[in-house]
Image (tube, rainbow, N blue to C red; front, side):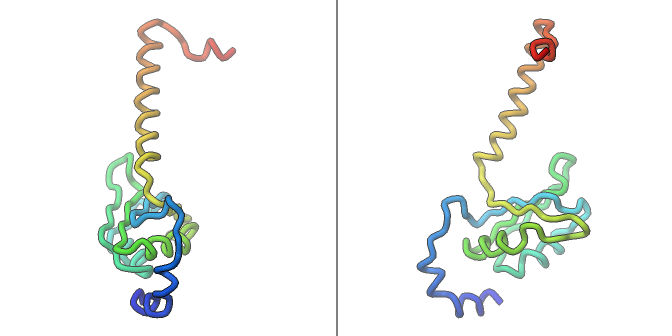
Length: 131
């Protein structure tokens, strides 16, 4: 299927400018917890060659996955078609992987822990300043 698409639209692919956030790696959220890698290949493989799929298995990463395509245009096609796709009564959220955004979540959690430690150290309730 990918070869047919490339043969039909190969010229347009070379001349198409993609937004800067587009890349080959996708971050998928809201997956069923019991989804397998094989099911992921079935769903995402329809849009092009896949280099790697990693499905979250820990408590914090369940329901998420990373999908890396061989070609950036295949990744864009997958995002366009699979965002909002229904899998086991769950609507997928398919985003381009953005390392800066992923790091911000970790930084926020780290800052929240530091603030809680300082509040405990100095006997501050955190809610009293909001009243």
